[in-house]
Structure formats: C-alpha cells, structure tokens
Length: 178
Image 1 (cartoon, helix red, strand yellow):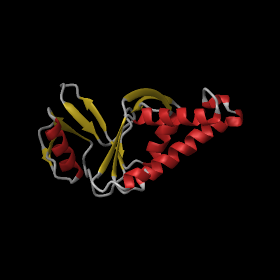
Image 2: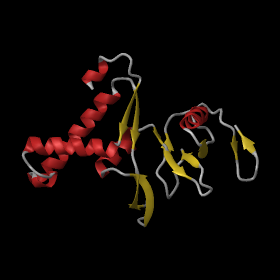
Image 3: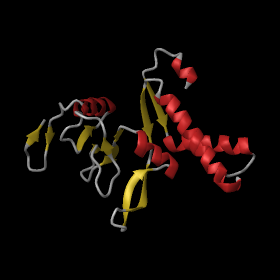
Image 4: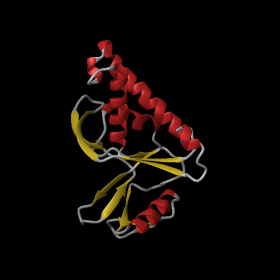
C-alpha cells in the first residue's frame, strides 16, 4: 500500500482473486507464528492475527484513494436466514473473514454470470439466492440486472451507463426504462 501511494499513474487496483489474497495473508501470519494453520496457535490467536492483518492491509489499500476492484469466483453456501431457516445462496468464494470484509466495506457487489438465454449479465441487486448489492446513493437507480454484451468494451460501457443511470433496460414485458 505504501508503494502504491508513490505511483501517481495508478488509478484502479484490481485483486484477482480476493480469496487468494486472503490465503496469502494467512500463509504470512502462519509463517510469522511458526504454525502450519491458524488453528494451531493457542486461544484463537492465529485466526485473530490473520483477520487483523488482512483488515489492516485492505484498509491501507483503500486509503490510497484509488478505485479498488475485488474479483471472486462464486460459491454456494448454506446461509442462515433471519427467521432461523437455512437457504443456499451464491456468495463470493472466499473465507468467512474475507466475506465479512466485503459485507462491511465494499460499496458495490456485482454478480457477473451467464443468464438462461446464454448472455452475459451483471446483477447489482441481490435477492434470497444471490449476494449482490449497491451502497452508493444515486447510482444504479432502478437497476437489478443488465446485459453486458459479448465483449469487454460493451461490458464496460454498459456497466458505466448503469452506474450513471443512463442504461436503457428492456424488461421481459418489452417496456424500456432508463
């Protein structure tokens, strides 16, 4: 993070994959403690140190003022609901500690997937089955999901248009909304 602060030309940091970054942090802490796994350290010290070091590093990156993109693969987990029931949910493939960071600190969780018709899509608003969401007021207004086309340029253009509330979305009933 300190090295990043001196690179004026870097505008956005992309971490691919977020889970691997957490794994590397865990390896580093285990090496420092002289243990093979955080559970091998007494009294939960290993897990606590991994969590502290990971959050400290992520916060240092966030404080550089650059854009930060965290890429995760998907995982299906049993998630306890508020009513006590358990439901399968698509979540970022990462440790619980890393997902906790996402829940606390990430402004937009977008789920990039192939729709039933085979087109690439991005879901911005989550539901009972998919973890996604937006905490930035005034952006992605009225957008649950949208097509990203067939190439990277169109995907980027559609994402920026959706972010700026300028993407025309055609609903299943044929009506358009901007």
